Length: 310
Image 1 (cartoon, rainbow, N blue to C red):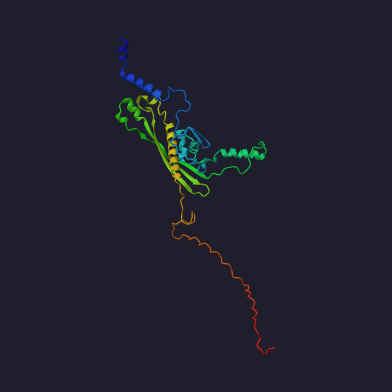
Image 2 (cartoon, rainbow, N blue to C red):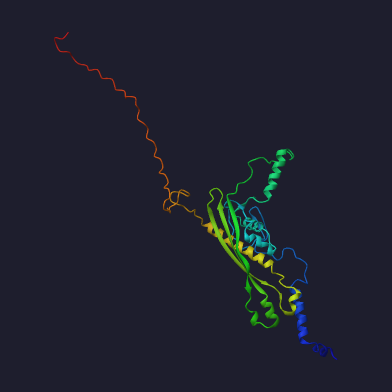
């Protein structure tokens, strides 16, 4: 039997199955390549040193001069933070700090775990263990003008591609494994001296996760969902970048909110039964002196006496 006839004798379904297995193995990472330095960069990548940024995203909003010092506060007890572990994600603070420094809109000051190390160095200096000239004296820690609080409002899979039912065979299986990931985030900016909220911003992002035939017929047990976690992490970071861009745009045209009479003096929306603020005391008028006023001495009159007087 010739080679061509021998090949044609192989069942077509078996050939298709073999091709599908090879494709699945390749796409799911079974045929992995060596890692390449600097590839697969996300929305926020690169580095920052002072006001200089390297390898940053060109879509990130920038400032020609910083607006103040900033500390980040992440609510680690919030439900959204606890759910990050299911995507193999940790704290959002490191990537936010990188993004903010690259923008040059704020100067980041440490208020996290590294504060313990700062205090440790000061304790060594106070105990006399540090070398002379270490210069860990008091009055050097920079105050945080503002605090920024990140929050994830929503992050999850919002469905699969709707083309699967219209595409035959392998193409339909791949289309059916494409999932849509979406995220919505907020950033709040608080003035530390007054406690006033200076700015708030919301951002969103979306991407598509190719699950690669996970759970499809004969090939379902071969693996799949090779990118099910990494894309979710990337979409969260992209949503935070969108939030930050919106905030920077608003702050460029910043004008402080005002209340007639001043902030925190009672407001202008009175309620029934509320105690009216006391009227400011009038300045006391100086008391009149009880000492009688001195009278000017009478002037002596001069003139001629009448004739005959002695």
